[in-house]
Length: 259
Image (cartoon, rainbow, N blue to C red):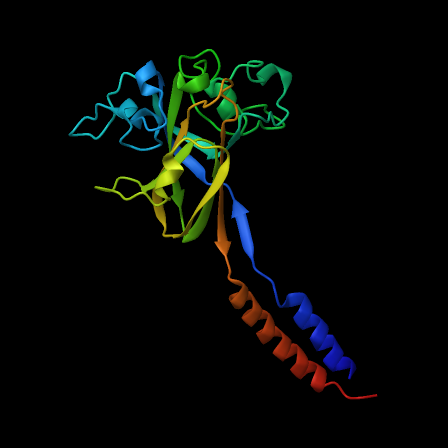
């Protein structure tokens, strides 16, 4: 009877398990465009307010190389670090490397990825730092007067799921693919409040994550872009694994001699 009771308790404890190991996606390429918008560009349906490769801020594109020749281009570089930013947090950086106080700059946004406890170096390594043309540029100005479009390129070594928490717009495409298809819902590219979008079962490969910070209200904050990659195991799969393990355990219990 005790053995049956033990088995019943184990089934209750393990019957609803789902397994997920989450970690941010790590970017290896970063492109940034930044522009002040004229009044006629500052409407919700404006293509300048879409987190898409078709945004006019990216144009013109060199037809041979595919590289943006836009006058709004600030940087197109190799980087290193997690896509994990929130301009409303500071991650308690040391005073000597703290972002410019009260300034919603691109550097301040990237710096929210945090700093190394020992070297005080940014955890997101980029040339877009303080006192540079890129780093000192305001990420947005209220009422859509200024916008910044980011393209983060990251790699998935295995099949993984991806969740994206963001304000304003995002889109997701396979990297270096002719006529790529947006892997996120179309409305995710629109200006919005903080939300989470998910694209599941992404195959191994390189991906472009487009993020637009537009500053919808009088104050441009928040500016949020956070990613999680994870291996999701369905509840049914987890249950089956635990049931298999319990069957082995019960067999072992049944072979124990009674006292």
